[in-house]
Length: 351
Image (cartoon, rainbow, N blue to C red; front, side):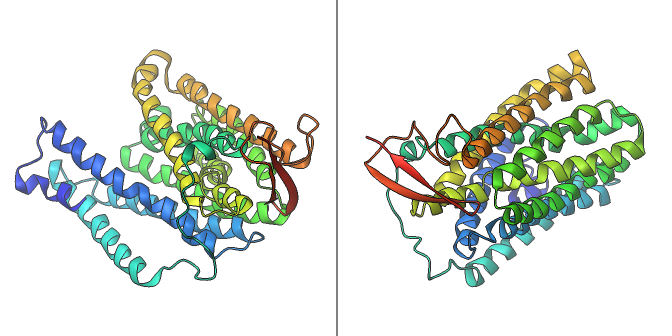
């Protein structure tokens, strides 16, 4: 980010410097992707199963706080013309990132009482676990909607209610704030009711209904309420599917694979969401803003169905199997004790 911020003065950034821009963004994404994976390992090592959801909810809300600060910086320099805006909008966050990295190196550690050593568990073996595959599918649907909103929400607000860009940016902060609240609330609620999937499936159904209505709203006040409530509904699934569930799966397997599971869930979901953004501009011109959001709300309904199915399996209603049983996971002849949401069940692995 610091190099990108300095690119104007160095003469490296111009309307034709697409390659330079692509390299910088790819490098930033590569290093930034390690933050969540490492963070899950650290938070999981200090969290008991009864407070894991709450702890990860607070952890996830910090991500949203950073997005809100970034939007505020963008709004503050809205009147700065041209490339002059790049220096403050990128240099300030880069300084914050560097400072946070130094602080984490010296003060953030993994719980020494928890075994987090390196064990060679191939990712292909993790993909044979039903909950890993289902979580990847569920998060992909949620991530599609979240990335679409993050990238297009300001444009959609401007076109829907006809307000200036600065007002649309400030209004979009309501969605970010709702995600922060939803992350903490969903984590606490999942600990309280001792079920992750019951809370996540309910949140996704509510979010789907709100999103379909939000796309057609023409009232600024109603739009503001919808954005905040939508953020609350989606904040839990966005934050907890790649983090809390990864820690739960790793704990059930009694192996330090939370980082690997997070990488699979978050990596696949983000990749799919990013690729589908290529069709947004075309769809927006052909179908209109309201229709395109209804179309992109469909993956959210798919995620709700997946998490609801996982809840029914967890509660013992899935295809006559006992809770947590995965007939497709075949590896060795042993029973692995699983604790998900306070319920103990058996995962029989059949060869």
